[in-house]
Length: 96
Image (cartoon, rainbow, N blue to C red; front, top):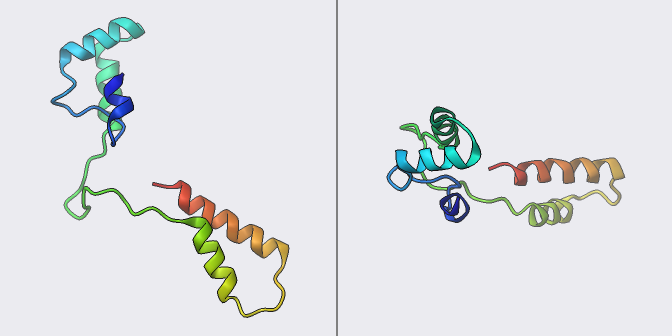
């Protein structure tokens, strides 16, 4: 469990989590080895040839919100526009 909590990717590296660890974790949680192995494999991201294995850049949603409002030339803007803009930026920031 320490590996999951302290690894940047959120899952243990295959070399750091052997079949012995799978068996021990399965015994403690009451799950089969195959179920734990499938869960570990599903938690790992497989990079394609086009995708770089570096983390995606984060989005500073509040800074983007302020910039959009600052550059809007209208004298007044509707509440629904501001709420919609905030929701879109929040959704973009929440994705990884």
